[in-house]
Every structure is written in structure tokens, then in C-alpha cells.
Image (cartoon, rainbow, N blue to C red):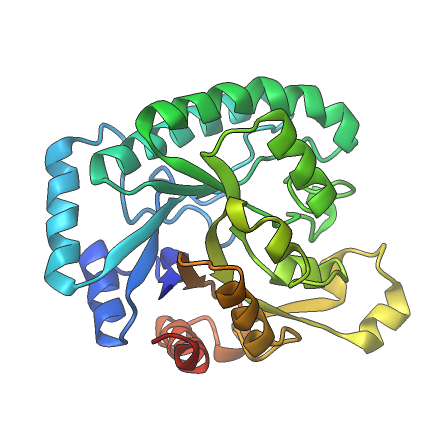
Amino acid sequence: MKLGFVSAILPELTLNEVLAFAAAEGFSCVELMCWPPGRAERRFAGVTHVNVIAFTQAQADDINALCAQHGVTISGLGYYPNPLDPNPGVARAAVDHLKRVIRAASLLGVRQVNTFIGRDWRRTVEENWPRFLKTWKPLIAFAEEQNVRIGIENCPMLFTRDEWPGGKNLATTPVIWRRMFEEIPSEYFGLNYDPSHLVLQRMDPIAPLAEFKNRLFHVHAKDVQVHADKLNEVGTFAYPKLWHTPRIPGFGEINWARFMAKLYEIGYTGPVCIEVEDDTFGQSLEGRKRAVQIAGQILRPFFP
């Protein structure tokens, strides 16, 4: 396994600066964000460390040379939109850019792209399913042609009234994952597994690992704190922003020793990338760097 971090937390830095920071702090890899340049649609989105628009082999070679210079690898390319948005134009733009990210990964020799399935949050899982298949069967076929695996993050994308009631990502639970992989049984289709999203749903974050070990392409290391006093006031049907806080690994509810032990037990050898959405350290660049540093110190004993 390799320890890394998600570059979304360092939007002010250039790619060279991100890689230099990773090398200086002893990280082996980085998941690089590939949003289209421009205004972010939400926090932690809109970060562009690899601009995949009109991406060329020469650009890929330059990036690979930069990675080699710093001794840091790319764990995957990340882009997390809503390909099933009810607005056809928004959904089409997401799918088109996701294909650009997949092509760029192929040119870079990076076999991993991480993203969301998406969802029409106003409709049930069953109502979303036909559109899921219509959108994702050709996307996975395209990824296969490019020899790039797709890792779906299991974030519910359900935190505020704008995402209520269903959330903006379909792939949130084992029962849905099973059905996804049965109906699109490609070996290029798997998970970018984030245990914090199971804790948010009051589920066991370790239990699914063994069953889905062959679909585990990439792991996000993020923790979460559920505030019992707030939850007792508003209940789980209230917006999750009202009763939980994202934390760095070790500062929340996940037992990282047990989690890492299970990854070793099932034979996982891929990247584990720290994702920072924890405002405990402040929102300044230095505070966010400090969050990455501390999270790295907490997890590093689990890596040889």
C-alpha cells in the first residue's frame, strides 16, 4: 500500500508545488484533481491540478517527468460531478468531461479515475436506475477501451437542503454496490472506498471490505464525528450538516488500526489517500497543510 493525499485541499498550489509538498512530507502518491477550470460549484470542487481539456501526450510526459523528479506517483485522477443531474445539460457536460479525464489518465499511464455515479436527488433509487445503466454502461465500456479503471466514491452527497431528500450520488451502500456490479460486471468498475461515509450513515465501515475486496480500487482516508447531543435533538432525518463534522483520520469515530488491519487481511495493495474536509485546523493554506501533515503522522505507522 502507498500513503498519499487528495490534492483538492491545496487549490492554491501548482502541480509542482503539490508534488514538492508531498515529497517533503514523505507521501508516496497524490490523487490529482481534474475539474474544468473555472468557478467551483461547491466547496472542494473546481480544483484543477491537471487540466485535461485538449490534453496531449507531450503534456502527459511533462507531468510524468515532474512526478519522477519529486519521487511521487499519481494514485488516480479525481473528478466528482453529478453525471445523473436532472438538468440534461449539466449531466452531459459532466459525462463529456469525465471522458476527457479518462483519456488523460490513459495518456499518463495512470489506470485509475475516481468519481461519483451521480443521482437525481428528487427520485428514488429505482427511478434513477434506468438512467444509471444508460449513462454508465457506455462510460465503463469507454474506460475499458482506454485501459482505465473507474473507482466510485460512496459519498451520499446529502448534507444540506440542496441535496435533499435523496442525495446526489447513487452508490452509497453495499446493497446498491452489489446491484451495480451485477448489472455492469466489468473488472474496470469498482470503488473508491471512503469509510467515513458509512459512519455518517451509522453503518460499520469495516464490514463490507472483505466482500468487495476485488472491487476496491482506491481508498480515501477520512474520518467523521457524529455529535450525539445534536443528533438527539434533531434526529437522523435532519440535514446531516446539523449533526456531524468531517475530521481527519484519528480525530473521529473510525478505529484506524482495525480498518488498516482489515485492508492488510484482504490483500489490498492500492493507495490510501488522506482527504481533508476538517476545519479544526482553520481554512488557511497553512492550516490545511497542517491537517495533511498530522493525518499523515497518524497513519504512517501502518505503512512500511
